[in-house]
Image (tube, rainbow, N blue to C red):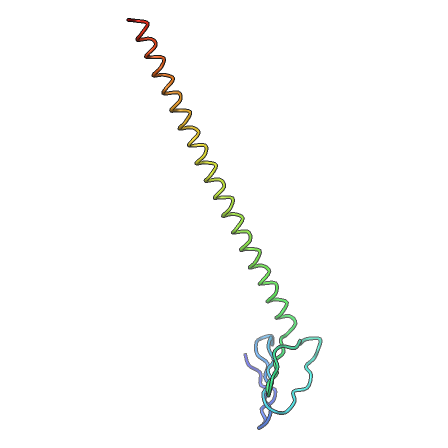
Amino acid sequence: KVNILSADNDFYLAEIGEPASLRVALGPRGAGNADGNYWQDGAAGNGYRVWISKAAKTKGTAKLQADAAAKEKAKKEEAATAKAHAEEAAAAKSRSAAEAAAHKAEEVRKLEEFRKEE
């Protein structure tokens, strides 16, 4: 939603969003100061000025923090999965080595039995 507050030949002022989250002033005429309880200064330059609602900025900051937390959680889960796979591979290798040793021991036992029988 765009709410046009003023549209003169040298000044344009509008609020954007429902509830308003952005306020834009365009033109050479000064825009004055917006309500400091609701708005905080955004970008400004030659012939324009922008304000951002404090609620929208807080919501945006909260979203950024939530996104960062989600990325960190995914990173930790990925690390935990990689660790589990590495441990599983090591255990499998250890089992294979143990099985090979048991097989070798069985071959030696059979060879010793064969020699005793000769």
